[in-house]
Amino acid sequence: MATYIYETVPDAPGSPVRRFEVKQSMLEAPLTNDPTTGEKVRRVIAGGLGIMTGARSSSKAAKPTCGTGRCGCC
Image (cartoon, rainbow, N blue to C red; front, side, top):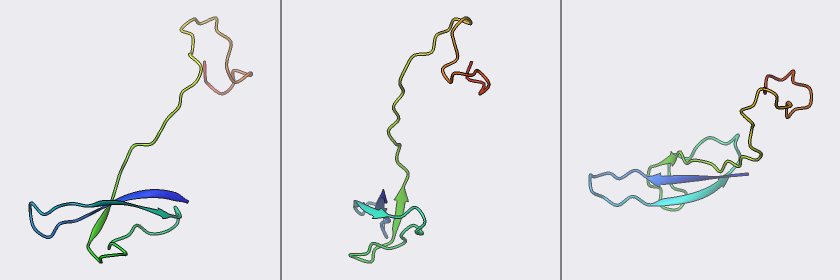
C-alpha cells in the first residue's frame, strides 16, 4: 500500500488548507472528499526518495557495470 498526501480545497480565498495522509492501493481512485469531514480534496504530488550508489567513471576504459555491456550502460 502506498501513502498519498491530500490537501483540502478551500471554498473561499484565504481559507486554511489542511494536509493529511491516506494509505491506499495504487489501483484505487484518488479521493475527491475527505473521509472525515467531507471537504473537497486533491492529491498532492510529492517527490520520492532516490538512492544512487556507485560512481560511474568518465574513463572510456571502464568496465560495464551490468557485466555484459549489451544494456547500453557504457
